[in-house]
Image (cartoon, protein in one colour):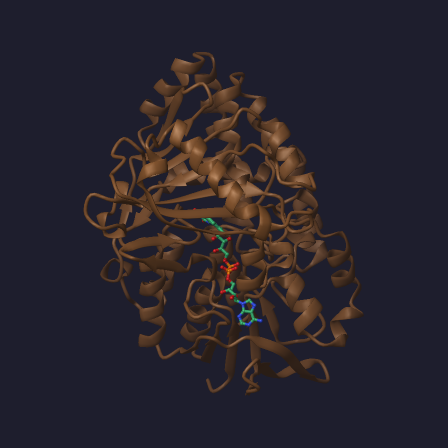
Length: 488
Ligand SMILES: Cc1cc2nc3c(=O)[nH]c(=O)nc-3n(C[C@H](O)[C@H](O)[C@H](O)COP(=O)(O)OP(=O)(O)OC[C@H]3O[C@@H](n4cnc5c(N)ncnc54)[C@H](O)[C@@H]3O)c2cc1C
């Protein structure tokens, strides 16, 4: 086939779409604004310390394996995925630890220690999340949702699954203990949603984790991106970094060419965009889309995910007692989430995700040292926060809190620290309002209401990535590429 598919953006959605288009026999060019593949999954390397910048928790690994199988290749020959036994350690403000593990009996014992009657509740959560998973993931995550009739046909199933409930309501209906409620309701934060208003469809993550486990690619998520990059080159995809698409040229109702910031014009037959959809329609595409009522309404009423403050650092000692993935919870839960999602100023307190890859993979730091990243959900750029002024003080507060709790002596042992704020998400990934995960996973921003994978206004435009159906997170964006594959 001599048709030319151009993929804009090399996040996981764009990488998967490029491979899928290539497997269909198209000539494929992948254009990326940044200097690395991976989008939010880029890698920082400084003075012997390595940091994955984004995703660290790999679920549903078969969605990645499929990309290699498209070319009769085995992912195991490219990257070594290790299944973790300890998934997350939750640390509560009173010092209580709760280990969420692959061994379900161990998890049940941990629940029992906090509140014996919640053991049954957790089993019910797993049973219900399996039902949600069967429909929400197996039947619908890789199906196109641009047809409103198809959407209406799903409504009875959504009502049966009580998709209008929030994740918090779903978890609280089965669990009484407040700590366990928090531990089992934080999952929406991994895809940019507030547990108090994210549709309970996202509770399928519980079953998804139990079914396929939680994995870590040795060498980090960057090693996974490199493995995909190697496959792209082997299969003849033309990869061009440092190319930002500035303009889309159309003739009649077809895109005919793309213009880059280097003033190149690239002719194309089909375009797959991994660009933040709001930015795509608002700034890159021509006047034609601005007249489209669906785009106008989505843009006007869009609610964005929270922003992220990510602090990266090394330590001159090893914190061997610290798990690979820790959720460090502050004193406030619902109120803090309210401040993050609806507030206009930077809250004084925080809850943190602490990533210590050196717990599994020594390649991330020099001998006898650790590498860390600490992620704090914060308001996005619709709030009035001057990150240039507040960023360093916020980083210092996080270091001080960790120094007093899970990382004693951090004040003295910390080296090579730097951070990313929502400003960087806006500048580096062209993310609208610097949101960490594009638009929020709200019920009225899901399925047909989310940006369609089939582009608006022209025949030959398709969309993948976090802002499109089914949503953010690696399983979501990999599925968005499967949806687009079904159109090619
Ligand atoms: C800190 C952090 C931690 C996370 N942790 C996890 C996790 O543990 N597990 C998980 O499953 N998910 C996690 N996520 C979510 C997950 O990383 C994202 O949802 C997913 O990677 C987004 O992929 P995407 O395809 O939407 O593309 P993105 O990663 O958003 O990449 C889009 C790319 O398009 C490029 N681009 C944009 N505009 C243009 C243009 N005009 N021209 C050319 N290129 C352009 C950008 O430079 C970027 O490289 C995390 C996210 C973050 C930020």
